[in-house]
Length: 241
Ligand code: ADE
Image (cartoon, rainbow, N blue to C red; front, side, top):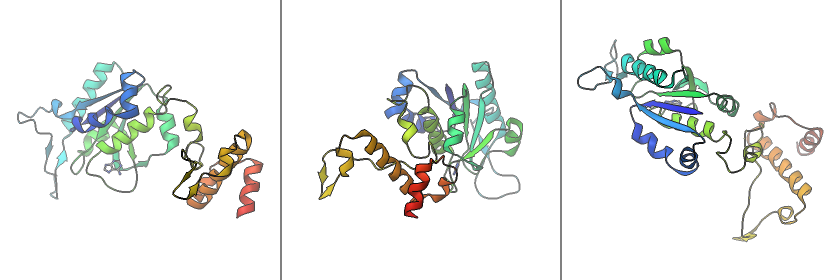
């Protein structure tokens, strides 16, 4: 998969994308993630990409032309039209389900807004999918774009060390993950649950499933409505409710 982030702050994105699991996945060619500087596409001789809002008001608005030309140059380079996503608090809130769907696409472009937003006419022209990472407002779309790129990349084959990792983790199957422990077996007077030391695989599995159900019930009961529950799961939940 190829992801292109269209931004005024390439360095900010590149510093994050060069680190840790995503950095290694890019190096190993498991995912291609590029940044594209919108400022390189301005027609303004002073390289300006923003201006005051018509009608007055605070801040600056990103102009349509550099964004449009930046996206079109990407289309020319790829020889196809990537699925365009605009990061905005006005978009649909990102879910693991949408992440999973997006991870199946060949080409994705992520547009980052800044200042007071982007001239509405280029949004109308390009008709991007609008995605929010939550009901709060950031100073720009870069951090949200990085969150989206990270969440998609880790779903790709070979990016995580073991493909089964995400089948057990929070939100993958609408349940929160069970608690994890590592050495030492006793720390600060707190012990690792006995069952995890037993080596009894079926009991460990059963305990983890119950912990997942318990945590989801206590912390995010809304998720249980979407979860695929077995008869045993339901019995367990009934026994504690
Ligand atoms: N840009 C600013 N805030 C944002 C948010 N919550 N989600 C996506 N993009 C944003």
